[in-house]
Amino acid sequence: MNLKMSANDRAQLAGERGPAAQMAMRIIVRMAEICGADSLMDITGAHIDSALFQGEATLEFAERLAGLGAKVVVPTTLNVSGVDERGWREWATPPEWAEKARRQMVAYQSMGAAPTWTCAPYQTEWKPKFGQQIAWGESNAICFANSVIGARTERYPDLMDICAAITGRVPAVGLHLTENRAGQILMRLADVPRRAQEDDEFYPVLGHLIGRIAQDRIPVIEGLVVAPAEDQLKALCAATASSGAVALIHLVGVTPEAPTREAAFQNRSPERIVEVTMESLREARRELTTAEGEKLDLVVLGSPHFSLAEFKKLAPMLEGKRRHDNVQFLITSSRLMTELADKAGYIEPLEQFGGKLTVDTCILTTPMLHPEIKTLMTNSAKYAYYSPGLLNAQVVFGKLDDCVRSAVAGRVVRDESLWRE
Amino acid sequence: MERVIQGRALVAGEAEGEALVTDQPLSFWGGYDQRTGEIIDRRHPLSGQIAAGRVLALPASRGSSTTTAVLLEAVKLGKAPAAIVTSAVDHFFSLASIVADEMYRKPIPIIALAPEDFTTLRTGQRLRIRRDGALIVLTGCVL
Image (cartoon, rainbow over all chains, first blue to last red; front, side, top):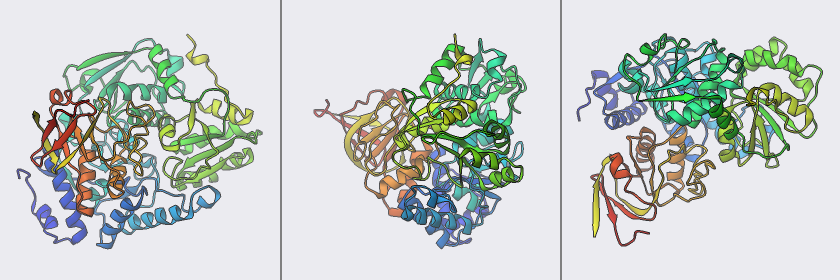
């Protein structure tokens, strides 16, 4: 074994910090060997995707660690769970599922992780800082932390994120190291006008296209002439991390490690140059819709979790309107954001509209939707990407105003003006 | 006649099964039904195929960090692939198998091949995996 270990690493591996730390360190060390790491390194924060109830095995894993006395040693947030702990009874969630998912939540909280229950931890007070070494799970959050903030995390899978939080150590590889953060593929926006770049709908579509082209490479995007808003970057990262295994995107002139193209590539040459045209974006947009026709059962917003700014934007669109009786309207968010939105007066218009809120979780991670919901509409590329496989549902992708208009009309309405040739 | 391809055993073990091969990465979350072993990513070329008990050969995992949890659940339910063969060192599949070893003493072999070896694999071939990471293509069963 070539892995250099500190005295503390060896102590943990020998069980001197208890059996939970020992098991977690055993997993970290085996992963370090697979990654070809020379050594382990410290992290100063973690975000845990493992708390998501996926079945008996993830629950057993959580309760095994908790039962062995596991405690996190760095500030740690929790990603979405498998159930809306307080609101699940309003939906189709089976009680047995709710109980097991709740047990899994309790197990991770008992380890000392903060019950944030959100896939947008970068929009909480726990947001990491530039250059901070962290171990994050949740693909959209990983991409946002690396790209938008310039914090450093590898793509930590479920079951490993918690081992990192318990031991405080990760293999010193990948995106933790400066030399591995250089861009690899150059993607140039060719004929994408400012008008398109200012539109919210552009970002999830661009993200979907980037992920599909970049796969597991680090893309550098050149040609943005606007400064995207935080929620636009959030939508971009979530889309990219769904259609590809992308953990870091450099946006030249926008993201912190890409003041220039040369800086983004660390003065290396791109492996490949791809032109992003309006035509390729149109095709990417078409891919995000699988449903045909105008029929609609549910409009769902909030993947990643809806932010305060998004609630603020949505509220005036809903004023004085009501959803069609045949179309449900749902927002998935965190407890924290919904409380803030409520204080700001953004929840009342939603309730008047006939909309509902789910917190802690999302439609992909808890069996909350009734089986008669066959067609969804969303402004989230992540929801659009995963719904057909996970929910066996048809999906329509559309911008926020189209989602609202469709909910009112009771059928799919989309403004195509941005995308016309 | 047998052909031996030497791979790297990311997680060592022995297995034998029919190959199910794709050149497209797959997220198990939203892509693999842990209760049946069916590939359910409707955008994926293997959509509708059952990978349980077969040797699943794919370049790597993709997307969601929940892939590992789905694979662990599939191991517990007996619906995991017999082994997974990749063309890159895939941390997600490796981790799921390591945790399956910790929890159930049931790791599934995870083998990384050189890309040029990976491209010689075909669906329907009968494959045997040895503990040292060698992958034996048992000819005569090739479709």
